[in-house]
Length: 358
Ligand SMILES: NC(=O)c1ccc[n+]([C@@H]2O[C@H](COP(=O)([O-])OP(=O)(O)OC[C@H]3O[C@@H](n4cnc5c(N)ncnc54)[C@H](O)[C@@H]3O)[C@@H](O)[C@H]2O)c1
Ligand SMILES: [Zn+2]
Image (cartoon, rainbow, N blue to C red; front, side, top):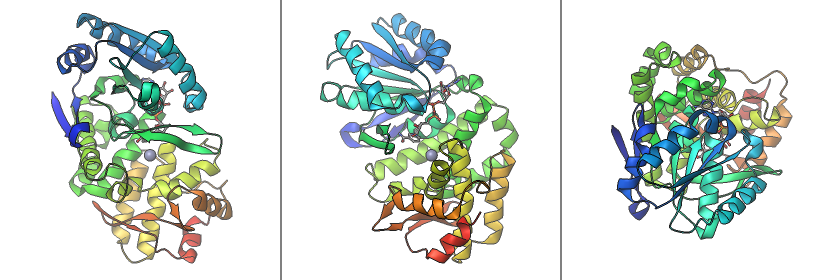
């Protein structure tokens, strides 16, 4: 079993990665002594696929466990869902010695983490991420929360899990479009932190897309170790953690402008290419490296161009309302080389106009 460590003092936790890990989770939870009783939270799709396996694993370890579900999809990531789940926990008599298990994608992880942070002012929770995006990104780092009509992820808390259990086998049932959402974040890690990993992705694209598990596991381990290092250094996104937003400044604008019809991974892919164009225009990044990134994104089947239905002015308006905009200036994470980025708000309007022109 591969084990990584997120070093956050008393809030430190392990990330365990192994094919078939699902069956071992009960034993491991028992050894760690996280709680005497667990409630698994899952969306209806994931509960159907993996609920029984997790319940069986905990039952075998003698840990009493129940499962509570909510409808799959981002539309469930609301305060109303959290309120409904909190009532279910209270009705089940859950107390501060008990714990939650987030079994599912980023939506489940964000909801369950926020519920764990607020139920009885905080109970332990663990993550069993089942989408590639959740396995390489959202399950690590402790950002939890929900959407409100005024914006996505506007209500939430930093609240770290006690452990993250990653079983790459579950990706076999993941729809291709969901896999691609994770791939965009995977490519992001190569650009922001690790040029060798970027080369690895160039060389193993077919194996990744055909879900060769040893290769996928290596991808997940590398991404998690990068995220763990970044989070350990800057848990609350004061500085370094902002590099994880590479591709997300213009990406979020494009995603919002599509009315969230465009998949997050597609928006991030488009945002990464746009950030490269800004970096090239500023003379920070070479045309050849920008082409390498655009080629890799396209080779994975992700889009590289802002959709023709977008408009420059609308995209600019979205940039200004972004959480990453301070004092009217959006900040950008721009590459200086594959494997290295810089955070800057020093991008003049005409360059932004040029890149956002559809
Ligand atoms: N907390 C963070 O740091 C962080 C980081 C990135 C994204 N996010 C959040 O994550 C969310 C997106 O996460 P997501 O893309 O995982 O979405 P998701 O949780 O909605 O999962 C996508 C779909 O895949 C299904 N699914 C999950 N695992 C499956 C499996 N193994 N087999 C078959 N189907 C499966 C789900 O039922 C769902 O329909 C967004 O709300 C985003 O804001 C959070
Ligand atoms: Zn993202």
